[in-house]
Length: 390
Image (cartoon, rainbow, N blue to C red; front, side):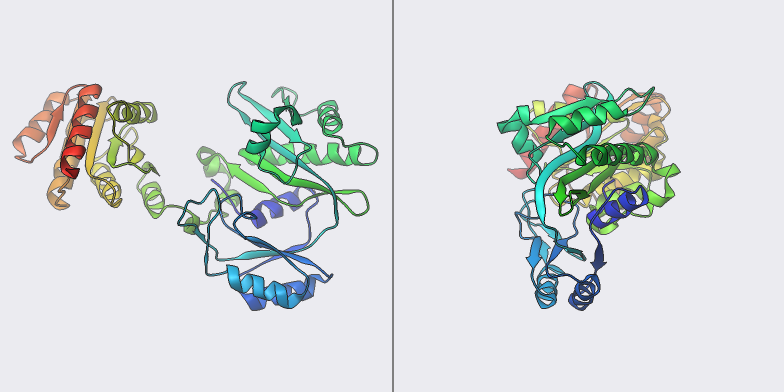
């Protein structure tokens, strides 16, 4: 789960990580009042969306008067911001963050994340702050340093000093960096984060370290024990289909293909999408119905998948263990009848009560394509979609 920059900075404040003074506002008049309240001579107006690259898209504006702050907010709020990460449609801007501008001497990159290779929490830093870290990694990988954290002892002071020295922090900045990294690690650990990123971490007037930007991503599987983080979720920034699916106990992620997928189990869902791609098709979604797929849940899965106008066919692939094929079959029949589904449907059932499931399907009199194996199911789905598009 992602959160906005202003929300991440509020979490930073709770952990004594230094951030600029700022106000989040929802209108141009509020932006004007925020600038006057903050004081100073220059301000930064930052669009709040769940996407990076805001500066390249015109979503970060430097203003030298309260009136220019108001104008920048007026231009951003209510419009769509297109960045390299949003796609051509962009994201609607509903709020902006107004902050005091800083006199920056140096910029660094700092992040704590999960390294999937070592399966360890890892501290990542670079002296190339304010840039896309992926670009730095591609062009100058030597400028990125990493330090893995032993989960038995946590992040140690010497590791923080090692990272700080490697990116060029020294003198009075060194102890500041150690404190900041330790606090960021504690926040990361306490809130079950997957990413805590500061880009840039800046040296500002008075030789102070300041987190000028903040990005955090959290493990959705841990949200049940983190109500304060769950409350930060912005449903307007998420695909409505994904939000609805969550409410029905379905794990759904929209993709850009045309073969709708309804599968039980994340691993089987990934294998199904791979099989579709192997046969020259493109999956329209990832959808895991979970281990207790009632007929109602299956019917809801069909409805959510078909809300995507790009879907030209559906592949339902169930290998029942905890699930039962007869339950799933009842859901399929209900969905096809009640929703008047017009796209081809390929069904593959295996596992618990498979014979009963196929009996329900065959006695329904409905039009569907039967498959026995995953490869056969994927091939039939791709061929059916191509045939429907012809």
